[in-house]
Image (cartoon, rainbow, N blue to C red):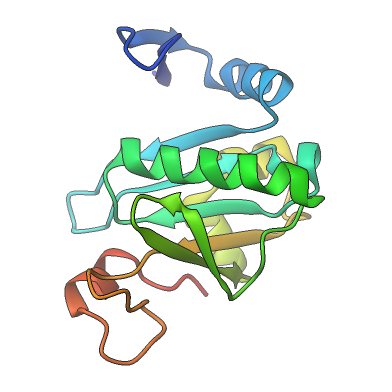
Length: 165
């Protein structure tokens, strides 16, 4: 059975909810997007989280982030969503963006492969009724500020957030 958890305020207890499609619809109506987080897999797949509805509500590509704790990834995506709304629907692709991850910038890159969509953003595929929406990956740097697409990145950080094709 599919279920989700929601809390009504940051310090509130988590409450279990069934019917995740309804949760997504409600979050998109109330906030503009929903965030779905998936815990790390048994075979070493990193945890990931993604938005659903950001493209419809803010004309901004849906976003996905990998390899951080689920709560942190949710905060990253919500902050990106809030930043995208007043910018007319676009965070800068390929540039460093401050104010998203405490003490570090993030960068965004385009995800194009349908296999990446199928493997990671199932609820966005359902919500948009197919692949007709853009998806950007949010990259975070290592402790030295080096991103996975740059030379000399810490290999542990690179392994946690593979570049989705």
